[in-house]
Length: 381
Ligand SMILES: Nc1ncnc2c1ncn2[C@@H]1O[C@H](COP(=O)(O)OP(=O)(O)O)[C@@H](O)[C@H]1O
Ligand SMILES: [Mg+2]
Image (cartoon, rainbow, N blue to C red; front, side, top):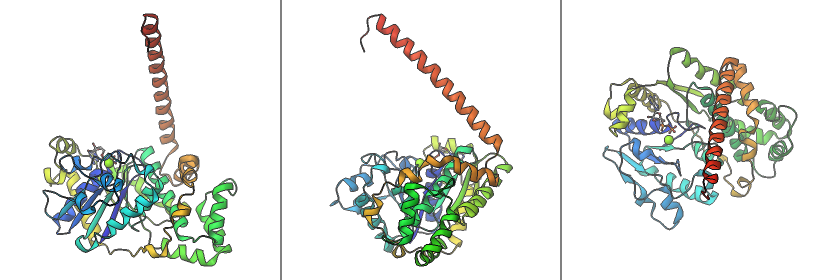
């Protein structure tokens, strides 16, 4: 069974669209597919595949460990495609306990005999659970877009996956793990999370852990899809992200393809049909078919979990704060250097954010005024 997690770091870049339409393309190609909505708390994948509002979903299962998992797997109108809805009972991935995540992983792996491809729509964010689901495969898909924030978020997500991978590869008590903990707590100079330097250090102090990481990371090749392309120059951003990943993360990502913004998607959505069923000839549908083909043609990488320790105790450690968006300036530097972001892009972003802030202030003042008027007119809130 191939597991294909689909992530982005940020919402609104087309993750669900890609996950759903790829799932259908695979099913049409004769693969037995399960599509799971792991965007817990904000699940809407059922809308994308035109499935009616689900009664039961992953949340139902997670809230009742004795529940029968097969009950949350729904048939769809599309032959060979089954669907696991999210549902709003779990208020998001951030609230997922390690034990719940493990229970879910176990159920997913148990699908293998009856499933050729399992697609996971991971939702937004870089929470540890999301990273762990992403790391179920060495070839997870990362969806991004040419907009600055989308590019930045894809890179931040990938950097977090590298950290997460280190944490799961280095066994507890090893010098490598102690080193990682120390860097996490105290930093190691101005560029404290510069991965190539960290790997050099680890190689020096703990050959064995380094070799282990090297072996696992050698099979870790996330695949990038650049969505919402507006013009041909946008295509280059993908290559630049790739260069930044190689240089700053020691990570070889594969460029899976680009997808243009397609106005037909709006009509497809309005008619509640996935675009590849609504209009197989649409530019967007054709892009999906191309990407699906490319995936089916490619050999599957071995990315064995047994090389890694999915030990709950150290996963409880608050590493999120560390690997989260706090060191964003550093990420910006990495991307600026490769040209994935330009100074112009950044200025543009800063300017639009300032406008945004000014607008909010104005709205805020307006509301304050309204409230004080209401109060002087005798209204008690
Ligand atoms: N290539 C595209 N062309 C046109 N619309 C798109 C394209 N990709 C995504 N969209 C639209 O953008 C919105 C966000 O997509 P969605 O898949 O829900 O993103 P995510 O799951 O990452 O939050 C949706 O309304 C979707 O229809
Ligand atoms: Mg989504």
